[in-house]
Length: 524
Picture 1 (cartoon, rainbow, N blue to C red):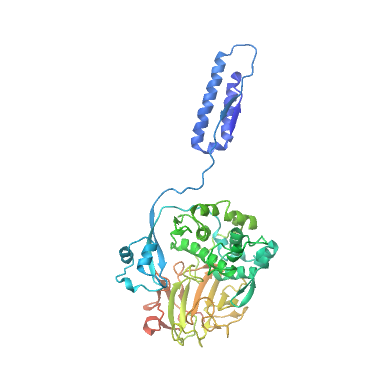
Picture 2: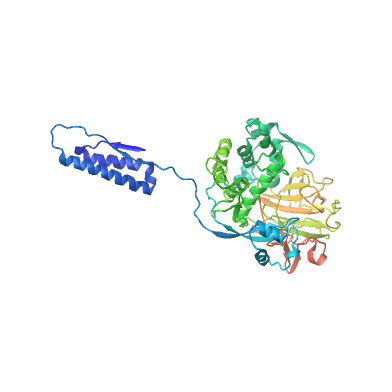
C-alpha cells in the first residue's frame, strides 16, 4: 500500500488534515504496530514540509515533487492458539482384546499410574465395557468462534417444515440418484438422511452440508470412487456407504454437542492423534461441528475446515445464514418434566438393567434407561417378551419402525417440538400404529431385540425436548416417583423413591434391581 501527498509549504495545515484522514481511513489503523510506523513516517514527511517553508522565498511558486511513503502491509496471520498446557481427563471404554499394557502404551501413561488413577489393584481384572480415566496433556486450544446455533444441530423446531427430499431433488446431484439397502429395505439417499436425522436427532441441513463439504454428494452428479464409498470422508472399511457414514457423523456430532453440555468432552481428538482443548465459551452447536471434523483432519487442515472458508462457507452457499434458523433458548431454563409412569403395568415385576446411557448410538446425552421384563431369562435371550411395554404419558405416535416408537406428548406431528419419548426394541408384532392417540397405560408393544443394538430383549426408554436428548444429569427423570440417579459410568446408577433404592444391573436380582409397578404418582 502507498500513500502520496503534495508537500505544499503554504498549506501545511491542509496537509496535516489530509494525512490524518488517510491514516484514519486506512485499514492499518487497526494494528497498533503499523499505527506507530505510519505516524513516524508521516511526521518525518511533515518535517520535510516545514523545512521547505523556511527556505522558500521566491515569489514564483514552483510545485514541489510528490513525497511518497511506502508502507509494507503484512497479511493477517492464521489462527494461532496461545501456548498453554493443561491436563484433562478422558474416558476410555475397554474393548475385546485390550490389556492395561496396550492401553498405557496407547495413551503414553505408565501401568502403575493407570491402575492408581482407576483404583485397579489387579491388572488381570480388566473387563469389557469398563470405563477407564485417562489423563491427557493438551497444549493447544481450539478457536471458539460461533459456527452454528444449537437449534441448527439438533433435530428441533427449526426443522419443522424442512423437506430433505425437496432439497436433494432440487440439487439433483449424486445423492438424488442414490439407493442403498438398509435393514432389509431399499431407501433413497434423501430417506437415509431423514432416517439418520430422526434416529440420532441431529439437524439434516448439517448432515447435507457435511456431505457436500466432504464429497460433493448434494450438487455433483459424478464422483470419484473413494467419495462414493466414504461420503463423509471417514475412510473406515466397516463404515462404507451413505447409511454407515452418515450414522458415524451424526454420532460424532452428538459427542461434541453433549460432551460440551456435560463437560465430558474436554478436548477434541484430531486425526493426527493430537488434542485441542475445547474452548470454554464455545456453544454446543459449534462444538459438534468442530468435533466431527477433528476426526477427519490434522491440525492445520482442521483449522481451515472450521474457518470461514471451510464448512460454514459450504453451509451458507446451500442454506444461507445459520442465524436465520436460530431458536433461543432451545431449552427453557425453567423446563420441567411432565408426569410419567413406569412403562409396564401395575403389579408386574421388571428389572432395572441399564442406568443412564446414550439415547441413540453411544455418544449422545445419557438420556435413556433400560428395563427388562421378568419373562426374559438373561443375556443372549432375544425371544419376544409376552409382557407389554405401555405408554408412560398421553400422546400421539409419530414413528413406529425397526423397533423404534416415538410418542409426541404435545400431540403434534413433529418429533422435534416439545416433549417426545422414545420406546426402543419394540417388536413389530403387536406394535402400536403410527397416528394412534395413546393414554398413559395403553399398549406400546412387546420388548424384544429389534432396532439398535441389543443382546437381550428389553425396553430402552429415553426423553427428548425440542430435539435435544434430555439426560438425567440435565433434568431429573422420574417415573411413578422413582427418580433416576446417574453414576460416573454409563449404564450404572440407581433408582430411588423415598427410602427405596434399586441399582442398575445386567441381572435378575429382586432386592437389587427388581421393581413392581404400582399406581404411585402415575396419572390416572
